[in-house]
Length: 549
Image (cartoon, rainbow, N blue to C red; front, side, top):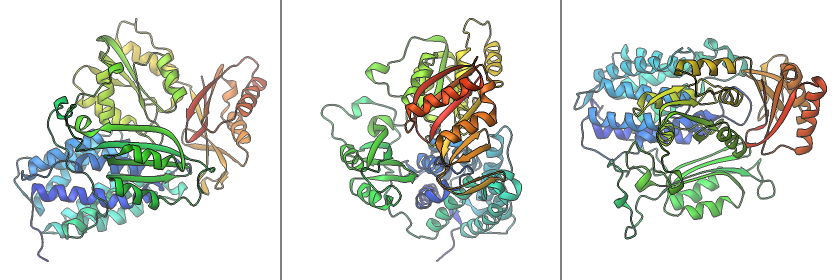
């Protein structure tokens, strides 16, 4: 096989697709590299969906400059989670490095990767070493100094050093060392690069077919009217809670689901985390997918979009008849939440738009942009309510041009709840409002109770056994107990939640009313003066979220 000396626009798109396909086969491995031993690992999903944003563009005879620019735009809009955003920025920098080139030599690829690394680092306010950033930097520097004069040699050198760098990530980041894992985002990057190299070598790694037929025209409702035939299908996304009454959850085989989905569609993502099943498929018959999946569980979320309309490369969102833009206002609020009860609570607090998402369901940059459009305000305040969503919100804020956007760095539901409940739109300036938000979030404690999916010794004084209920505050596991109520009580005591004046107990979908009352009574027993409120949040992953102000 002759070595590849120049990269064309079409070949670059093929490599992106190969990288996405190879990551698709290893997405569970990446998800499982989760620091906390709870069913919320989603780095692999986030990176795959980010890659698909770049892969799902039309074939082209354009230059490497134009093709890489199209890929970067798709990835920027599709970016989810911190690793997804950093990945999109890396490829956006690569596109800038290819600017003006018709094709790219190995030296051009080296220069573009260096720009990509610099661009990715600049996208993070406080870059953390021992992450995808470190691995991308060290692998790029090594490959650029390897003397490679063809693309295969460059990629081989990149991957070799990336693997060594990945092995070093626990030495650079203490939280990885304690959890006994390597950085998940960096692992995802390596799978992407391995897929690109295999594609460069001519290997066929895409067992499933992705839909790359989306056009790039502006949104036009005439593309689909009463005389039209469906050609692009529906983007169908499901979050399913597996039910013991319908299936054997422990031995549930996603391969069977994938085989079914391959018969009815493409662009398939099928991932099981504990009792939660995530599905993404492009299909002409979404009703068949719904009927099939209902056979082994119940739906937590269902999202079905007409791709002819929703994915015609227009930055404006599609609004249903009951979601037309409201009148332009001075201030608008966008919040992120998961669970009907929590979402309704944020609407009651004054949010104009609540984006569906949270742990294990990170919204994309494009989701935020559409939410900003719906908010339709001169100034928009955004509450991500999750540390893994902040970068996507900021990326959307940088892209959005129809108003000022301020991302309030609310890292938990508790932060967002406390800040938004104190919003005073009558204050004279935006800075005063932001200061009020920051003040409201100070001292807020958010505790989360979830079930462990593996053994862990992340904290030496709190050994975790698979199946235990663990209490988490911030980045610390406070307790691990066989009994869920014990876990909640111990978390409350060790975090001193009952010392606060206001305590909010947010119930998850697997919570118990009698148990919830016992939790409230325990807080009142510890502090008779505390005001205790209960919200039926309906969230997954966390049996309880307890907020103390």
